[in-house]
Length: 421
Ligand code: AMP
Ligand code: MG
Image 1 (tube, helix red, strand yellow):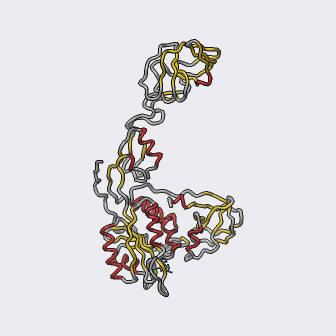
Image 2: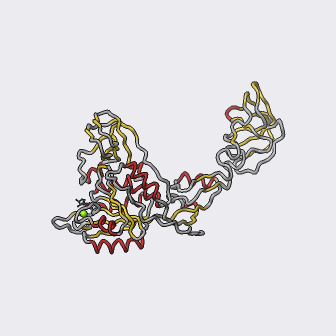
Image 3: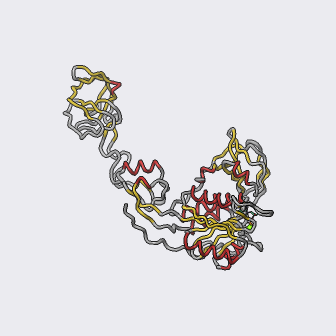
């Protein structure tokens, strides 16, 4: 395997998360547009064999080296000859032998026919094939009724892919089907991005590690296992950065160490403007922070900033808000940083199985699932209700405007799977 690391991508600007002055509650769409505009790939590349390319991101456009099909061939088992036929009975002498898939093309004289099997390259002198079910064979002849169009039951060379066609665009998250296409197009190795190293750090004095004994006033760190698994599932290399106490010097040291070994840092907790909100305080002091007050529910401010040249996504601590903000904002941002395409999750309009009076202002995401073709939502909207995250199979997205939702009204449901979750 060859390996040609690309030149290091241009660093992100330190002010890449800065917001226009005077903006307080940024609409979700605007926040997404800013991320999309300002973020760029930070990963290098390598060349891997086809068999290792699934799940990776293509580094540049990949062109076909071979046409598919490479030669004109037969789409069915039958008999091949030259030219179409009018109405009426036709009787053609059969040449000896047959053409099967993988055989080198032979030659068939005008007015004669040859036995052909699916996938066989068309012999010279054959451009039309009749299905074996539509003929009888007797005395070394094939007999059938017309009419039949010239070219029937054949595939043209390159009708699927031509040499030089772009079979895979740059930034594509490579799928199993893509491997089939690349193989057919004669591509045996692909330049792909190296995985984005996503560090996940929890913050808060109240947190203890699952598996240890939690004292009074303590809670288990629920965000870190969730966010590490999510980063991995989105195709990135998840790096566990541990837990930081609500203590500024310690957090600073942990961020310094993290910046040495990851491409992006996701923190949860401590992102607002309170006394113990050390993530936002540190990023702010570094002069490269923007507190994104996004008009979203659930979700308090997101602290976005740069730490030693590494982008930091400071998520709210509440697990529900942490997950929703990751899916909505961090997911597409990480995709861009990793060299992939920007993508908008596919939602579907379905009838609501719930009633809700939604206030105008924020875009809301409700924990939801589909039952009997309708969107059910979790009984409580409380952002500490982790059980609802696990209960849900997706999110209902309600736009910024106020709305009285009645049972049966259409609402937009986004399955978790649409996020690549
Ligand atoms: P914060 O954003 O730090 O003010 O935290 C908001 C709420 O989320 C508090 O109730 C925290 O205890 C809780 N929280 C913060 N981090 C975590 C975590 N890693 N796991 C579970 N709950 C958390
Ligand atoms: Mg906290």
